[in-house]
Image (cartoon, rainbow, N blue to C red; front, side, top):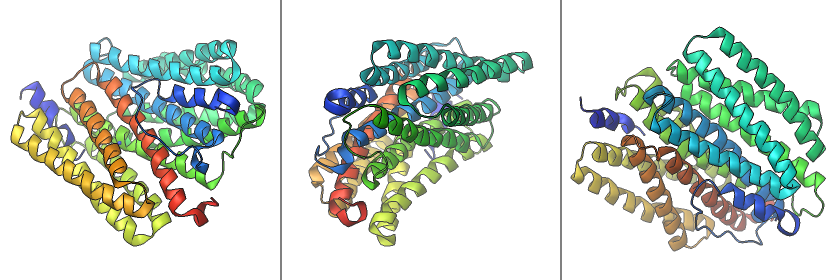
Length: 411
């Protein structure tokens, strides 16, 4: 089978702290991709400096996990020295730079430099761990785990010095990051059907890390308004995580099917599809928790349909079936109209603004899918851009939800 056709089967079932610092953190969150054109109401309780900080850290830390997994999967499929893997590493490197800029915007250049030195080192340790696992080199795995344990200790002390959080609490959280990402790497290397769920778990762990760090920063820097744990801030962060993971899980379905040479019945592909479906269920539950069971059911019907339209788009693109592509794009345009009307009715946001945002989601995810199918070195960058767009979507959507249901969020 021609390589493009093999790759094309992939998606048959394929998401100022005080006076200026939080603006720096929020800007850093979009630094690894082209900035989205979202505009959330600055007066919303979802857009306080504390809420902005929490959401920005959640975005960057989730993307760290997702982009690390993309490096692992790409290296397995195309080889560790391939241009595709180098491109994936470049996207991960930009995420690292954005995290460093976020820390530097709060604590200064010296802290930024120290952060970057340790953060880049721990990525290298994960690389060594992955290589050791893939080559069955127990000594290399052991050394990498020892290095990661040392990183947990040193990085926890660094963050404790900055945030005044207890070292022991930070160590426990960092150990959770290490163990969940190791589990995801193990599953990807082994082509396990649990890989999609393990990746989702590792990404979800970072939601808690973002909250812990945001609370510590807010407590250690004077003049930061808003609460990290307010219902409105929590809603925005939750939507940020879930919408980013929709893009990440979709991309992982595509990548995993490529690794399985287009065998969509392969257990690891079915596992990736399951993780994407679970993300859909979580998004439906979040929407239903605000607007009730009928709204949840309607949301799920439309959301699942748009995933199917992306499937058809991917197959059409991969097989050079222009009629299939055109039909999928027409279906996606219809989804934009129907879903924007549904969301606008619930949130009171302007339907035209919601539609424009949905078109941004479609165009950025189509670009990422195209790059993955074409085996392009730009795939990592395009996936990061699609995830970044969803962080802006979460800001706008959460603001609309809170404004439409103030009694639920203390607004």
